[in-house]
Length: 291
Length: 278
Image (cartoon, rainbow over all chains, first blue to last red; front, side, top):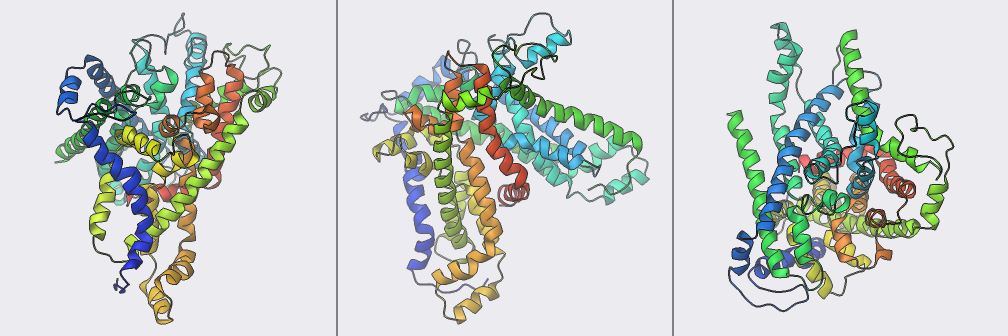
């Protein structure tokens, strides 16, 4: 592109507005988070520098580490499920069969449904007399209703259902877009060599969309570590603390007036480290498998 | 896509599996609809036989609008969406244009900063953003809800791609005709990216309808809640009638669903152009 010469203020006309917004609502809070993490500030102000005190407390905070454990378990359940189901669905609907376009639209549709409202809906589905128990009892799989949301053993796993139900929509869309760009020549060559459908899909087609699979895994891991809406709406973190996740703990510690903004900022930073690490690990693991 | 003829066996298998997948997506929604259409006399807990309401009624929808403040929540959401779409359009267009066509010192650095902040989860700066918003006196206001999430990185990259695709000749011709940078932008460039403006509008609407944790945190008066927050707030009340909440939840889901079904092309090109190629 030929760089047109502009007067000095012209770029400012265009990037000025966003710089004002971002300096106020992005860069300032980001820097402030780093500063507050080393103070004992409350959410109504005050606070003085306390060095690493917040982090020392945090590393010994059993409730926090329990929340960390639950959040990682949440990721360990949802990420493989979403990757496997969405990849299968994408292969399934990657066809020109009559009517398949309608199925595609339908399968993608949960991604536009507001998550909090979906969670309200599933709260009813998973009640003792809700749809899930009606089906399981009607089909004689179980005799007594399962306490999906009221058992401390089951609640966290029940919440993952909602995440997977909604998360598969976008993941399938992304994977299908990649599948549609795969060339048919290699598949044809493998077919002539006598490779069956399963073999061709696994060894020829899927390796060509590996980059996309990794992207889906990274995006899903990050959103799993940030999980808040599902437990907040459906269980409030309970029963007991059974579904209290990192962000829910952060929310309890640093949002209400008078709570500990400094301590919550330290939690925020640890969350940030987890998110970056998860992205790096998912990325790295997939690279090694590819090599 | 698959052009070759498909064997009958494969077609049948695909159809069975596609119907199964569709049932998993549709099931909870249809059950919700069935619950919402049932009168107070009819059980919501029976198996399958009770799936079709024997005496369907719209009473629950009426109740949702008259006895719980659903209309107010919808109005709040509409206001938030309108302002959010406006800020997204304004900021994404200006920024995308500068990143695509106006060389300035530090442009590459700013691009890198934008990409880096895309990896920053909002929850990390939640507490500090709340403090900033409170200090500016914007807590519990519409501006306070919208400004911290005024523009998405995706919108910026959608607009950047669109402006990059415009041929240089068009800009040169405008310059030779004596048009200044602002007139070139408004008169020549903007009319050429209408499609992308539509994409940003659609994505901005869907985003603002889905936002949850920030409005929940920054708004202290329940009567200012958007629908997404309001419906879950009501569902937690002891007096909540499952039928009425179901009706309300459906009302919340329908607007983004309609936008998606009618404007799928825009949703997809936005997600593909911004999130993947950006």
